Length: 514
Image (cartoon, rainbow, N blue to C red; front, side, top):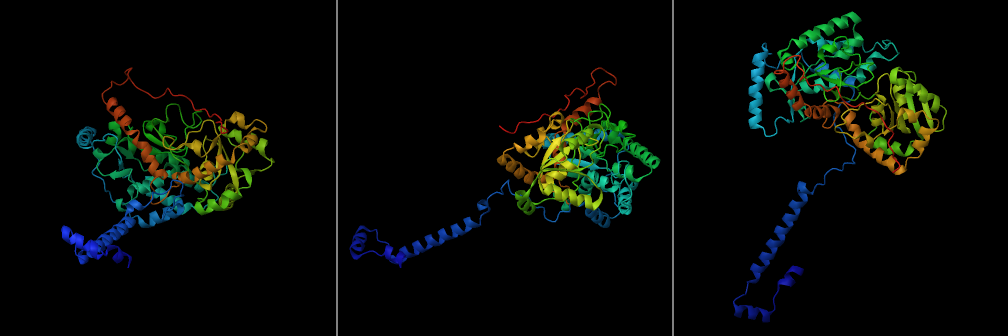
């Protein structure tokens, strides 16, 4: 045995060690070596099992969302079937603005002297109003009961219910906020049940459903009722609405009365600076938050991307309406320039499941997907392209993008100015000149970024619901500043502060050949 042979001593060395008084009995020596080897083996086993040995997940690894529902219809069905008639979990709503202001002061001071990070809080503390059912649950049931009525179309032919799904950000945010804390995954926001503890107030009114599914005068009457209910709240009166969140994701939502709530934080699809949809001073980046549309197509996951990225035979794809108003007039010009070109597919869009399948199939076969302006600077097509792994080619000079304080869209999309895009032959030459290595890099980034545009139940970390609150966190201190300032500045004085002076948005075509 190797170990035994190494510890056997010959008689001569044995004698010398005895004479020197250094002799160790052979049995003790063997026991020492045995214990040493046993201890060393145990250390190796423990070290191999230690979590420190587990490598961090690669940032390039495509994410997997277990047990998360991304279908609006399926999530809504589950929500309505499993959510009983709500009982108020919140405190008695304050009836006196002065008493609420005193309570807020005491709460703020407690947090100031106990929380070293205050007033830069995460999680954000959000108070969710318990609005009457006619503003919340009744509207969700109205959508569900009328969904099969596919003949319900807008004036330009778009299916109403599908349009509501695209703008259903109000449902996804509210469903997450009111879910039991044990079922929630987000750590960026927590619901509070005392108004004085809140950083922000969420108004759960489904403005888009009511606009499209109610008679015009009935909708306007409901809007006026909602407006009175909201502006009667002491918390609204205290801040002038500055710390209140209002989902108005469709440009027509709440349009008849929203001038009275312009101080609130609006959740928007974009910011049309031309004045076609929003009046000057109503929306701006310092106040409001832009949210992505809900994608129309299914996610092309890691397996899908591995199968499709090597087979994308179409250079440029577009499926949608070519005749649009306002900034969307660029579509007809692009159609005239691109239809019939080699490697390009330009199709007029159709409604329903057939149209969805055709769009999804076309995007997954294409390298680039055209994303021009529509009636508004943005469209759901951009987010369809992202979750399909198709590189968006954005031609919308007035476009503002969701979560741009967190995400860098230059890494996942190409931005082309309208002037360049309509030059004869310019766009296709530009696209064909992009290096394959750069295309591969963008595709890898798309695989990582797609999670940021998938609404789900439960809401996922780094999903759009999560990024909303991370963007909101950057606004809280400024909101407190303007709220307190408004409480002491003389009304009508010249020291009034506004955010009106800001540069316009102009898209430049970025060089990608360097």
